[in-house]
Image 1 (spheres, chains in turn red, cyan):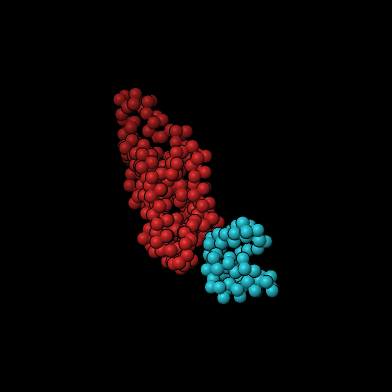
Image 2 (cartoon, rainbow over the protein chains, first blue to last red):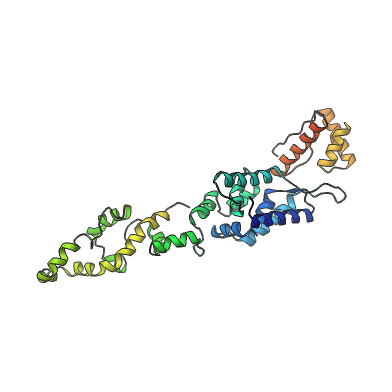
Length: 260
Length: 67
Protein backbone atom coordinates (compact mmCIF):
# COMPACT_ATOMS: atom_id res chain seq x y z
CA UNK A 1 0.00 0.00 0.00
CA UNK A 2 2.53 2.58 1.14
CA UNK A 3 5.80 2.43 -0.78
CA UNK A 4 8.93 1.52 1.14
CA UNK A 5 10.57 4.90 0.49
CA UNK A 6 7.52 6.75 1.85
CA UNK A 7 7.31 4.46 4.86
CA UNK A 8 10.91 5.31 5.70
CA UNK A 9 10.27 9.06 5.28
CA UNK A 10 7.19 8.97 7.51
CA UNK A 11 9.02 6.97 10.13
CA UNK A 12 11.90 9.45 10.11
CA UNK A 13 9.44 12.34 10.48
CA UNK A 14 7.87 10.70 13.54
CA UNK A 15 11.20 9.84 15.11
CA UNK A 16 12.45 13.38 14.67
CA UNK A 17 9.28 15.00 16.04
CA UNK A 18 9.32 12.68 19.03
CA UNK A 19 12.97 13.31 19.68
CA UNK A 20 12.34 17.07 19.66
CA UNK A 21 9.38 16.52 22.01
CA UNK A 22 6.90 18.09 19.63
CA UNK A 23 3.34 17.63 20.80
CA UNK A 24 2.10 17.32 17.23
CA UNK A 25 3.37 16.16 13.91
CA UNK A 26 2.01 18.66 11.37
CA UNK A 27 1.74 19.04 7.61
CA UNK A 28 4.92 21.12 7.79
CA UNK A 29 6.72 18.18 9.41
CA UNK A 30 5.43 16.10 6.55
CA UNK A 31 6.67 18.52 3.89
CA UNK A 32 10.05 18.66 5.64
CA UNK A 33 10.23 14.85 5.50
CA UNK A 34 9.28 14.95 1.82
CA UNK A 35 12.42 17.00 1.07
CA UNK A 36 14.41 13.87 1.95
CA UNK A 37 12.09 11.55 0.09
CA UNK A 38 13.57 10.61 -3.31
CA UNK A 39 10.42 10.82 -5.44
CA UNK A 40 9.08 14.00 -3.83
CA UNK A 41 12.49 15.70 -3.89
CA UNK A 42 12.82 14.95 -7.60
CA UNK A 43 9.48 16.65 -8.28
CA UNK A 44 10.38 19.68 -6.16
CA UNK A 45 13.75 20.05 -7.87
CA UNK A 46 12.04 19.97 -11.24
CA UNK A 47 9.85 22.84 -10.05
CA UNK A 48 12.98 24.85 -9.34
CA UNK A 49 12.84 24.65 -5.54
CA UNK A 50 16.02 25.21 -3.56
CA UNK A 51 15.59 22.27 -1.17
CA UNK A 52 18.10 23.46 1.42
CA UNK A 53 16.54 26.90 1.63
CA UNK A 54 13.04 25.44 2.02
CA UNK A 55 14.34 23.01 4.61
CA UNK A 56 15.66 25.91 6.68
CA UNK A 57 12.41 27.87 6.43
CA UNK A 58 10.34 24.84 7.44
CA UNK A 59 12.61 23.93 10.34
CA UNK A 60 12.38 27.50 11.66
CA UNK A 61 8.62 27.55 11.32
CA UNK A 62 8.19 24.20 13.04
CA UNK A 63 10.45 25.00 15.97
CA UNK A 64 8.68 28.33 16.45
CA UNK A 65 5.07 27.21 16.18
CA UNK A 66 4.84 23.62 17.41
CA UNK A 67 3.94 23.20 21.08
CA UNK A 68 6.36 21.01 23.07
CA UNK A 69 5.42 18.14 25.29
CA UNK A 70 6.29 18.74 28.89
CA UNK A 71 9.18 16.43 29.84
CA UNK A 72 7.26 14.67 32.62
CA UNK A 73 4.07 14.01 30.65
CA UNK A 74 3.53 10.53 29.31
CA UNK A 75 1.69 11.80 26.21
CA UNK A 76 3.12 10.90 22.82
CA UNK A 77 3.61 12.96 19.66
CA UNK A 78 0.45 12.69 17.62
CA UNK A 79 -0.47 13.66 14.08
CA UNK A 80 -2.71 16.69 13.58
CA UNK A 81 -5.98 16.39 11.72
CA UNK A 82 -4.35 18.06 8.74
CA UNK A 83 -1.55 15.49 8.67
CA UNK A 84 -4.05 12.64 8.76
CA UNK A 85 -6.15 14.22 6.03
CA UNK A 86 -3.11 14.53 3.74
CA UNK A 87 -2.11 10.89 4.15
CA UNK A 88 -5.70 9.79 3.70
CA UNK A 89 -6.04 11.91 0.56
CA UNK A 90 -2.87 10.43 -0.92
CA UNK A 91 -4.01 6.87 -0.20
CA UNK A 92 -7.52 7.45 -1.55
CA UNK A 93 -6.13 8.98 -4.72
CA UNK A 94 -3.76 6.10 -5.36
CA UNK A 95 -6.51 3.57 -4.68
CA UNK A 96 -8.99 5.27 -6.96
CA UNK A 97 -6.46 5.64 -9.77
CA UNK A 98 -5.77 1.93 -9.65
CA UNK A 99 -2.13 2.14 -8.64
CA UNK A 100 -0.50 -0.08 -6.10
CA UNK A 101 1.72 2.10 -3.98
CA UNK A 102 1.58 5.55 -2.42
CA UNK A 103 4.81 7.44 -3.09
CA UNK A 104 6.27 10.66 -1.74
CA UNK A 105 5.15 12.43 -4.91
CA UNK A 106 1.53 11.45 -4.19
CA UNK A 107 1.84 12.86 -0.69
CA UNK A 108 3.29 16.06 -2.10
CA UNK A 109 0.22 16.50 -4.31
CA UNK A 110 -2.06 15.68 -1.37
CA UNK A 111 -0.42 18.44 0.71
CA UNK A 112 -1.79 20.96 -1.78
CA UNK A 113 -5.31 19.90 -0.78
CA UNK A 114 -4.86 21.51 2.64
CA UNK A 115 -6.53 24.88 2.77
CA UNK A 116 -4.76 27.69 4.62
CA UNK A 117 -1.78 25.55 5.44
CA UNK A 118 1.67 27.04 5.92
CA UNK A 119 3.21 24.14 4.02
CA UNK A 120 1.18 25.09 0.93
CA UNK A 121 1.94 28.75 1.50
CA UNK A 122 5.69 28.07 1.56
CA UNK A 123 5.43 26.07 -1.66
CA UNK A 124 3.37 28.74 -3.42
CA UNK A 125 5.80 31.37 -2.20
CA UNK A 126 8.50 29.54 -4.16
CA UNK A 127 6.31 29.51 -7.25
CA UNK A 128 5.26 25.87 -6.94
CA UNK A 129 1.60 25.22 -7.66
CA UNK A 130 -0.29 21.96 -7.60
CA UNK A 131 -0.44 22.12 -11.40
CA UNK A 132 3.37 22.27 -11.65
CA UNK A 133 3.71 19.18 -9.49
CA UNK A 134 0.98 17.23 -11.28
CA UNK A 135 2.33 18.29 -14.68
CA UNK A 136 5.73 16.90 -13.83
CA UNK A 137 4.41 13.65 -12.41
CA UNK A 138 2.10 12.89 -15.32
CA UNK A 139 3.90 14.44 -18.32
CA UNK A 140 7.42 15.18 -17.19
CA UNK A 141 6.92 18.88 -17.89
CA UNK A 142 9.54 20.65 -15.85
CA UNK A 143 10.03 24.26 -14.85
CA UNK A 144 13.73 23.74 -14.43
CA UNK A 145 15.42 23.48 -17.85
CA UNK A 146 18.46 21.60 -16.54
CA UNK A 147 16.51 18.63 -15.28
CA UNK A 148 14.42 16.40 -17.48
CA UNK A 149 12.09 13.61 -16.62
CA UNK A 150 12.60 10.34 -18.45
CA UNK A 151 9.11 10.64 -19.93
CA UNK A 152 10.00 14.00 -21.42
CA UNK A 153 13.27 12.66 -22.76
CA UNK A 154 11.54 9.78 -24.47
CA UNK A 155 9.06 12.13 -26.06
CA UNK A 156 11.81 14.43 -27.16
CA UNK A 157 13.72 11.71 -28.92
CA UNK A 158 10.67 10.93 -30.98
CA UNK A 159 10.29 14.59 -31.80
CA UNK A 160 13.77 15.16 -33.09
CA UNK A 161 15.16 16.76 -29.95
CA UNK A 162 14.13 20.25 -31.01
CA UNK A 163 12.50 21.04 -27.71
CA UNK A 164 14.67 23.96 -26.64
CA UNK A 165 14.13 25.72 -29.95
CA UNK A 166 10.43 24.99 -29.72
CA UNK A 167 10.08 26.77 -26.43
CA UNK A 168 11.61 30.00 -27.68
CA UNK A 169 9.64 29.75 -30.86
CA UNK A 170 6.25 29.09 -29.37
CA UNK A 171 6.10 32.64 -28.09
CA UNK A 172 5.27 33.95 -31.53
CA UNK A 173 4.23 30.89 -33.47
CA UNK A 174 5.97 32.12 -36.62
CA UNK A 175 9.08 31.06 -38.42
CA UNK A 176 12.11 32.84 -37.15
CA UNK A 177 14.03 34.57 -39.94
CA UNK A 178 17.56 33.74 -39.12
CA UNK A 179 20.10 31.70 -41.06
CA UNK A 180 18.56 28.89 -43.01
CA UNK A 181 15.14 29.39 -41.47
CA UNK A 182 15.20 32.84 -43.09
CA UNK A 183 14.83 31.12 -46.41
CA UNK A 184 11.16 30.70 -45.67
CA UNK A 185 10.09 33.59 -47.86
CA UNK A 186 7.20 35.87 -46.86
CA UNK A 187 4.98 34.19 -49.45
CA UNK A 188 5.45 30.89 -47.64
CA UNK A 189 4.53 32.20 -44.23
CA UNK A 190 0.80 31.45 -44.31
CA UNK A 191 1.64 27.91 -45.28
CA UNK A 192 4.23 27.61 -42.55
CA UNK A 193 1.74 28.94 -40.06
CA UNK A 194 -0.91 26.49 -41.19
CA UNK A 195 1.66 23.75 -40.83
CA UNK A 196 2.39 24.93 -37.33
CA UNK A 197 -1.25 24.62 -36.38
CA UNK A 198 -1.75 21.23 -37.97
CA UNK A 199 1.30 19.44 -39.29
CA UNK A 200 0.27 17.18 -42.10
CA UNK A 201 -2.74 19.20 -43.23
CA UNK A 202 -0.66 21.46 -45.45
CA UNK A 203 2.16 19.75 -47.24
CA UNK A 204 5.64 21.07 -46.83
CA UNK A 205 7.02 22.89 -49.88
CA UNK A 206 9.39 20.18 -50.95
CA UNK A 207 6.85 17.37 -50.62
CA UNK A 208 4.16 18.87 -52.76
CA UNK A 209 5.75 19.31 -56.16
CA UNK A 210 8.50 16.73 -55.72
CA UNK A 211 6.96 13.92 -57.75
CA UNK A 212 6.20 16.08 -60.74
CA UNK A 213 9.40 18.01 -60.74
CA UNK A 214 11.76 15.09 -60.47
CA UNK A 215 10.45 13.90 -63.82
CA UNK A 216 10.76 17.30 -65.39
CA UNK A 217 14.17 18.07 -64.02
CA UNK A 218 16.05 16.16 -66.69
CA UNK A 219 14.40 17.60 -69.75
CA UNK A 220 13.69 21.01 -68.23
CA UNK A 221 17.03 21.89 -66.67
CA UNK A 222 17.26 25.31 -68.31
CA UNK A 223 13.96 26.29 -66.74
CA UNK A 224 15.36 25.67 -63.28
CA UNK A 225 18.35 27.81 -63.96
CA UNK A 226 16.07 30.63 -65.03
CA UNK A 227 14.72 31.05 -61.50
CA UNK A 228 15.66 34.03 -59.38
CA UNK A 229 18.65 33.31 -57.11
CA UNK A 230 16.69 33.56 -53.84
CA UNK A 231 14.20 30.95 -55.02
CA UNK A 232 16.93 28.53 -55.96
CA UNK A 233 18.57 29.01 -52.62
CA UNK A 234 15.38 28.13 -50.79
CA UNK A 235 14.92 24.89 -52.66
CA UNK A 236 18.46 23.88 -51.91
CA UNK A 237 18.09 24.55 -48.22
CA UNK A 238 14.64 23.09 -47.80
CA UNK A 239 15.07 19.34 -47.38
CA UNK A 240 17.69 19.58 -44.69
CA UNK A 241 15.74 22.15 -42.74
CA UNK A 242 12.19 20.87 -42.75
CA UNK A 243 12.19 18.12 -40.15
CA UNK A 244 13.40 20.70 -37.66
CA UNK A 245 10.63 23.09 -38.56
CA UNK A 246 8.07 20.36 -38.02
CA UNK A 247 9.39 19.58 -34.61
CA UNK A 248 9.43 23.23 -33.69
CA UNK A 249 5.85 23.77 -34.69
CA UNK A 250 4.35 20.41 -33.99
CA UNK A 251 3.40 18.75 -30.78
CA UNK A 252 6.62 19.73 -29.06
CA UNK A 253 5.92 23.41 -29.54
CA UNK A 254 2.33 23.19 -28.39
CA UNK A 255 3.31 21.17 -25.35
CA UNK A 256 5.49 24.03 -24.26
CA UNK A 257 2.72 26.57 -24.59
CA UNK A 258 1.12 25.46 -21.36
CA UNK A 259 1.10 28.67 -19.33
CA UNK A 260 3.23 28.58 -16.28
CA UNK B 1 -15.23 22.95 37.24
CA UNK B 2 -12.52 20.48 38.13
CA UNK B 3 -12.85 18.86 34.76
CA UNK B 4 -12.29 22.21 33.01
CA UNK B 5 -9.14 22.79 35.05
CA UNK B 6 -7.87 19.31 34.19
CA UNK B 7 -8.55 19.91 30.47
CA UNK B 8 -6.75 23.25 30.51
CA UNK B 9 -3.79 21.62 32.24
CA UNK B 10 -3.53 18.55 30.02
CA UNK B 11 -4.47 19.89 26.60
CA UNK B 12 -3.19 23.46 26.90
CA UNK B 13 -0.26 22.77 29.23
CA UNK B 14 -1.27 25.41 31.79
CA UNK B 15 -0.18 25.54 35.40
CA UNK B 16 -2.85 24.78 37.97
CA UNK B 17 -3.11 28.48 38.93
CA UNK B 18 -3.42 29.73 35.36
CA UNK B 19 -5.94 26.98 34.54
CA UNK B 20 -8.06 27.94 37.54
CA UNK B 21 -8.04 31.61 36.49
CA UNK B 22 -9.19 30.75 32.97
CA UNK B 23 -11.79 28.33 34.34
CA UNK B 24 -13.25 31.07 36.57
CA UNK B 25 -13.30 33.51 33.66
CA UNK B 26 -15.21 30.96 31.61
CA UNK B 27 -17.49 30.36 34.60
CA UNK B 28 -18.32 34.05 35.06
CA UNK B 29 -18.18 35.45 31.54
CA UNK B 30 -19.04 32.35 29.59
CA UNK B 31 -15.82 32.39 27.60
CA UNK B 32 -12.07 32.39 28.09
CA UNK B 33 -8.90 32.17 26.00
CA UNK B 34 -7.04 28.85 26.07
CA UNK B 35 -4.17 29.91 23.83
CA UNK B 36 -3.06 31.11 20.43
CA UNK B 37 -1.85 28.55 17.92
CA UNK B 38 -1.26 27.93 14.27
CA UNK B 39 -4.54 27.00 12.61
CA UNK B 40 -3.62 23.36 12.15
CA UNK B 41 -2.58 22.92 15.77
CA UNK B 42 -5.66 24.83 16.97
CA UNK B 43 -8.13 22.63 15.08
CA UNK B 44 -6.48 19.54 16.52
CA UNK B 45 -6.63 20.94 20.06
CA UNK B 46 -10.30 21.90 19.70
CA UNK B 47 -10.96 18.36 18.58
CA UNK B 48 -9.08 16.94 21.55
CA UNK B 49 -11.07 19.03 24.03
CA UNK B 50 -14.42 18.13 22.49
CA UNK B 51 -13.46 14.47 22.38
CA UNK B 52 -12.33 14.52 26.01
CA UNK B 53 -15.50 16.33 27.14
CA UNK B 54 -17.70 13.88 25.30
CA UNK B 55 -15.93 10.89 26.78
CA UNK B 56 -16.42 12.28 30.29
CA UNK B 57 -20.01 13.33 29.60
CA UNK B 58 -19.38 17.04 30.16
CA UNK B 59 -21.09 19.70 28.00
CA UNK B 60 -17.87 21.72 27.64
CA UNK B 61 -17.57 23.76 24.45
CA UNK B 62 -14.34 24.66 22.68
CA UNK B 63 -14.12 26.74 19.51
CA UNK B 64 -11.48 28.36 17.37
CA UNK B 65 -11.38 32.01 16.29
CA UNK B 66 -9.11 33.86 13.94
CA UNK B 67 -6.90 36.47 15.59
